[in-house]
Image 1 (cartoon, helix red, strand yellow):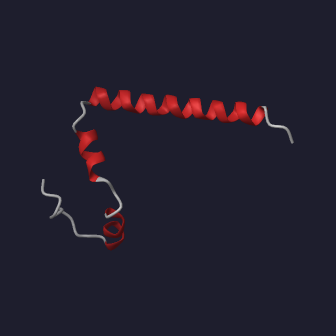
Image 2 (cartoon, rainbow, N blue to C red; image 1 turned 90 degrees about the vertical axis):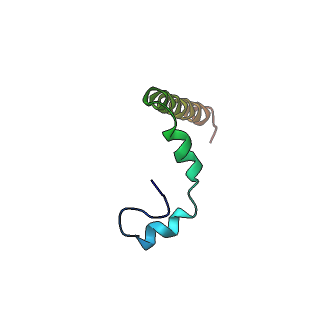
Length: 64
């Protein structure tokens, strides 16, 4: 599909944000298999939990 001519009418708000979107990230993700995408999502969720836990640990050790 040609990105230059979308099958739907152009939206000025979306067009304004498009210039700031890195299309290569979409291409890279779409090149993955469904299993690879799920594993990538699982790794991201695991990182979120680790960051939250680290933040809580840092908050618990803080003196006020």
